[in-house]
Length: 193
Picture 1 (spheres, helix red, strand yellow):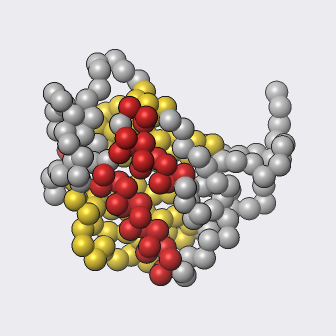
Picture 2 (tube, one colour):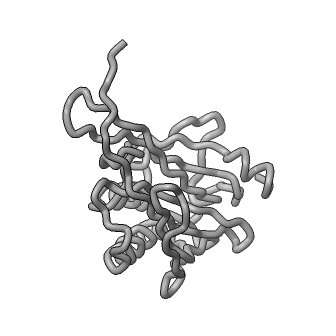
């Protein structure tokens, strides 16, 4: 079995965006920062949070409100938080025949881009609760983001960032086109389907 050398770098923290579904169920999406991002640069991180929130709103129905953004430090503690000047409301149409379940998710996945061969990289994922935005076929395991221009634009907006997403080592991640789909068990137990 091949081995790799763990890098000495670590992500300095995470950017997160808080959003809710029908005002009743709150969700948070977060992404590790790339090595070298300055957590105190709230001016540029605010611009980045707004850019990502706008792309997220395009990929969700109007049952979703994107309300706040913030920064977590390397230990996962809250470093900074503020509401968006104006909450983003989802703009995507509902999927034909899709039920507005609270627990339906699409997960973007990727692996960190190691700086040199033989250096370890980590897996990362980003879960997006989608309600009735997309219709899935029963038994379907993955949803290609390229099937929907707005969902794919959201993925590309994340991949185009110079701040995120990264693995825990702080290595840039490119999210893949093929995205796992499922009902989130924790949300389903807590809030229903």
